[in-house]
Length: 105
Image (cartoon, rainbow, N blue to C red; front, side, top):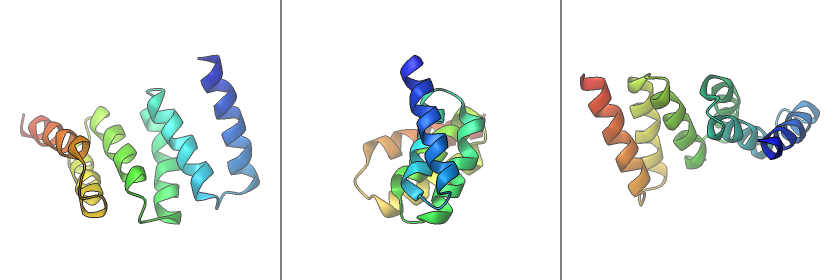
């Protein structure tokens, strides 16, 4: 956990220094999602998406975060975008299936 805290601190400093650095913003959002801090990561991932709308990995993290927060319609929308940008992803298919099944309940 200490590694994540140190990485988060460095990434926050990088984003504070240059909020238009899509890579730093993406990595900060992704780190927060990986740390199961989904709601904290979403604003950074949305910012990264705005800076680089063709980054399929950003949409994948957004889809994962939304799915974990039970925001299934948004999760499906983001995961569909991943499949448009990255047509060869079994992970996307699995997550989209999970979101659709959860949304049907």
